[in-house]
Image (cartoon, rainbow, N blue to C red; front, side):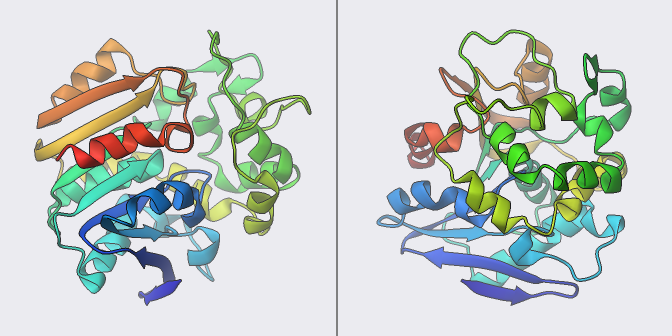
Length: 295
């Protein structure tokens, strides 16, 4: 592991392999180790960089404040890493979940050179929080609406941290229909019999033992991020692959979203992967590798 010293944090990252550059950006609630299996399959042909993003345990801030987690701060960290490590050999940026939002913003800002963008189970940017405020479920409003109060949300999760991770990484049944996306149901309501993906939730519980406040601050800034992004929002000229899992309950691709994504760039490719849910990079690595090779 290496560390890049920035103004307000030490950014932890790792680089392995030789060849063209691939940068892997994790989402929520993941970490730098999320990519280990995929990375192992890539390093024989590529130089692969993984990073623990701003506010996550290995790159946490000592005195965090909500305004430190806006999209320009998130992008700035990664842009400085790209410059510091010289990640300029046909750089492909792969983002999952929140990582895809950061990747898209970096490509839009055009402060660094990116050859291709691969967005997995994400998109370009979050809607305003009021959209989530109007989504009501049996056990409350949409979890992103609840996350606007980061301190309260973090406190609720910290009391049930292991359950939170078992809930987050549970396998979505292939016949799922309507899903309750409230915080209580989605993240804090898993039965012991629920099947989780091949990830060590006990290790995640230990990794995040100090809580998730800094990571939830990312969500608490989605409204201000819309304003900040006005400075650089544009149609991209580079190839962009969007990968979605057909069983993803968190990010469901619909016709309206698909139309918006096609309008977001000149070289847009959208794929839905059968039998995949939100954790597509863990279960369908070959689908990701195929998009990396198709440059």
